[in-house]
Length: 106
Image (cartoon, rainbow, N blue to C red):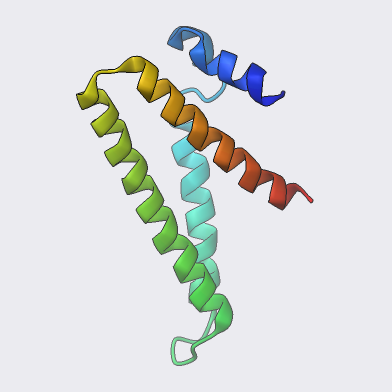
C-alpha cells in the first residue's frame, strides 16, 4: 500500500477501519514485546551493566515517552477541534513512522 492509499484509508469513516486491529489486539502485541524486552533485562546479571540491558531499558523508556506524547497530542488535537489540522498532523507522523519502519525492513 502506498502513502496516498494509506492516507485515504485513514480518511475513511472509522467503522471501515475497525477490522484491522479489533479490541485490544494492539495492546496485546505491545505487552508481548515489552515482556520480551523485560525478559532480556532479567536474564542479565543485575550487578553487571550490560550493553544489552542498557539498550533494552532505553527502548522501554523511549516507548513510554512516545506513547505519552501520542496521548498528549491526541488530547491537544481534540481540544483544538480542527479536524483538518488533526488529519494533516497525524498523517505526517504516520509517514515519519513509515520511513522509520522501512529502515527495519532492509
